[in-house]
Amino acid sequence: MNVLKINDIGRLGALNQYMRNIESREGNLGKKGLQRDKVSISSEAKEMLDAQSRVKDPERAQRIEQLKEAVATGTYYVDADKIAEKLLPYFKQTPGK
Image (cartoon, rainbow, N blue to C red; front, side):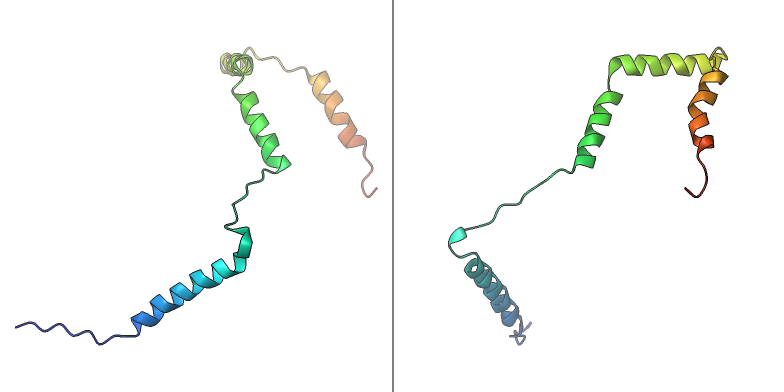
């Protein structure tokens, strides 16, 4: 014959603590009722979303494919003068100022 003994009455304290937490939370809210969650999107996140939409632009995707093909076939031309022109301001900066 199996005998079931229920001696652990300490678990009732956990239930009571749970109920007290609920009651105190409701008491803290008072007449306001339940507060709603809020979501805000930072300006950095908005910029990232804008960047993602630009990546999906079909014209941009086509241009990227053209560049990839030109590099793969060895027909991509790099204008060294333009690169030097863009890099020149970085080399003209005086260190420490």
